[in-house]
Length: 297
Ligand code: SAM
Image (tube, rainbow, N blue to C red; front, side, top):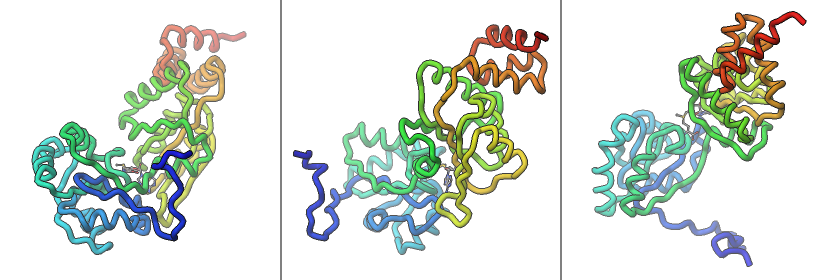
């Protein structure tokens, strides 16, 4: 017998009755296409006493477009800690509070985690209306293995930190991690991030998903090397999610490939430093290999 919670809905043509939403409700909003706001999301917003928004002016456009006129207050990265006590007090007084972000699923690369953690600690009921999420939509369109996947938010903006973050992932892969990797990225950083990814992860399968659910939606698939070369010559626009497939090759081939590319433009010492950071491999080992590769037969 299936567990009751997972049983098929009754065949009476009626939608399944949702659990009543009370307390704090996390409401997912569109990532570009207004049509993706679900009717349950609209109801949850319309029935709340207060809507916490990442940016109240940004959300005012969405709320007015769907005919919701409920008081809004800001809850963003910089005031979240200070907002927790007053929000918990409102929940204690029995208020229904909705939390939305500028786009997609709140908390995912967006504010709200600290509030949710505090509300759970106080035993308040928390609900969610699921909906659009750029990372999951990009994953389903990428043609890369859908599970396991590892969502990493935005890569560090500075190249040195980014290369070392990718190097740590390579170390984790060497220790057995095998997952599709997903990042958000800003358009003006896409080319340099892809170039750093190509150095760290080699020419493996990847995808760049742009402007999902919008007029100029595009998913470009290829090797990291191809994608890096493409975006080096074509400035990217709009909102972007980058995906890198799991590793396929053995490390030694991978190391040699990366060293060959790095040695084309750098001295042995610089190439070894670059590849050591990118791969997370010890500098001495990489330097010895780079030296051996750069010697004539
Ligand atoms: N909470 C959101 C979600 O659930 O998708 C993510 C918010 S995060 C601050 C914003 C980043 O998500 C953008 O910079 C971009 O990297 C990615 N993103 C958002 N909308 C997108 C879209 N329509 N197409 C591709 N990527 C998108």
